[in-house]
Image 1 (cartoon, rainbow, N blue to C red):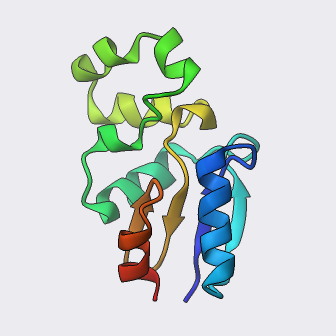
Image 2: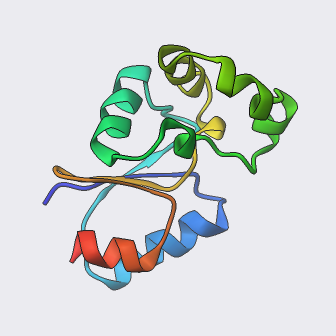
Length: 118
């Protein structure tokens, strides 16, 4: 199974998620979400594969989200506009993200990860 692990290395949740992957012997390709920001096309693919609402891909606790007042702006944006916005800066994207062939996981929930990754 080919796994892409998008993370921001200083993030404590990403550190816990990476440890979980390592402890469970799951091989993955790590990608620094700030240095290699996902493209709008990647985000659209992952969003559709995830089955989650697009708003779940936003890092709502991040400074950039708050500074740009996105809580009020996002509901007025089209899906394409939201994807383009997410693609502008990896710090807007919720992390970690795990992309497998049949699934996309956003955020770290060990129960959900166990179900999909074992």
